Structure formats: structure tokens, C-alpha cells
Image 1: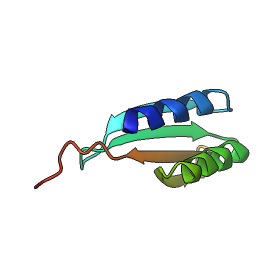
Image 2 (image 1 turned 60 degrees about the vertical axis):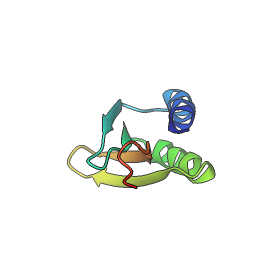
Image 3 (image 1 turned 90 degrees about the horizontal axis):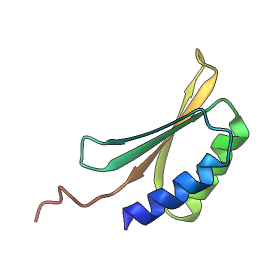
Image 4 (image 1 turned 90 degrees about the vertical axis):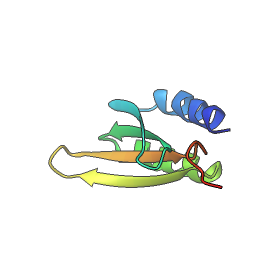
Length: 82
């Protein structure tokens, strides 16, 4: 279930050097968790956490803000068509 994975990721990330944490629904009905940090090691640690528990993710490097965002995508199965 995606809630358990999302909670464990938030608990892990809260101990790291993150500047922002935001959760939204994606356009396909998936839950998207955005974590921002200017520390590259923090983004790498979150990336390896996502790899270990099979969470889909995407990293966006923002050169103007000198920070990085990692978007973690959790499949909610709300809008699955039969």
C-alpha cells in the first residue's frame, strides 16, 4: 500500500537536510511527493531509499535556486480502468 511507503519515506527524509516537502495528486491520480534540498548528498540518499523499496522517482536540478527536487511517485490505483 502506498501510504505505508510514503510514511516511511517522509520519516526518513525528515531527518535529512531538506528545505521543502510537498504532496500532491498527479494528473494520472498518483500521489506525488516532492522533496527539495540544496545538499546533493541528501538527494542521493533519498534516491537510494526509493530504489531500495521500488518507488518511482524523477530528479530535477534547478540551477537558479541552486537546489534539487526529487519527485517520488506512488501509484494509488484510484483511476485504474477495467
